[in-house]
Length: 80
Figure 1 (cartoon, rainbow, N blue to C red):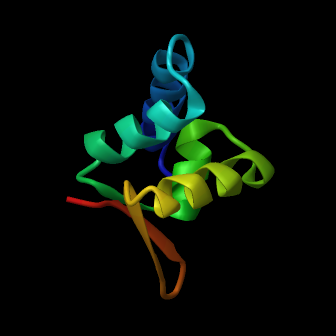
Figure 2 (figure 1 turned 180 degrees about the vertical axis):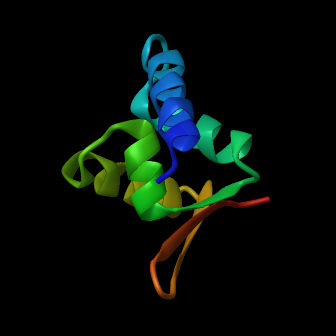
């Protein structure tokens, strides 16, 4: 990961963690990044451990808010 990406991630974590629920933070980050992101990058940007992230992703998938696609890694995308 490049230095500028690390700075962006830390700024995003700080900005979004102050007033948003974890669910809203995930949806906002996806929306702000073109509507899709690899799960590992989403985890890094949110600053969440997988133990917290996975149940939230499962909820959002059941609600139809996001789509999860497995390939070389898992891609998380907003449903339109």
